[in-house]
Image (cartoon, rainbow, N blue to C red; front, top):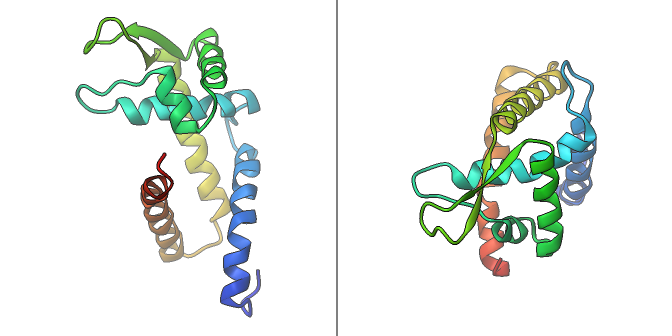
Length: 157
C-alpha cells in the first residue's frame, strides 16, 4: 500500500492483510514451527489462555465454542493434540464428573517455542522499521486483539 492510499483503500486492505498474516506465519526463521504444529497451537493457545488463573478450566466443549466449530471438530483437534503429547485430559477440580484439558510439559515447550518463533518473525519482518513504529504497531495490535471481545458480545458468541 502506498503513501497516497485513501482511508477507504486502507480499510478495504485490512481483511486481506490479516489473511496474509496467517499464511506467512510459517516464515523461515530459526527453529520454524511445522504446519501441523502451527495448527495445533490454535487449540493449545486457547487452553493456555483460558486456564491461566485460579479455578479456570477448559473443556472440549469450550474449545468448540471458542473456535466456533462443531464439537466433533473440536474433539478431533483436541485428540490430535493429545496423541501428539501436547495435551492431557484430567478430572476437573471443580466437578469430578467433568474432563478438562491441560498442557503437558511437551505442550508448554511447544508454546514457548511458538512464542519465540512469533517474536523472531516479528523482529525479522519489522527489522527495517524504526523502534517507535515497531512498538506502536505492537501496541495497536494488542489493543485490536483486546477489542475482539466486543465483537463476540455483539454476535452473542
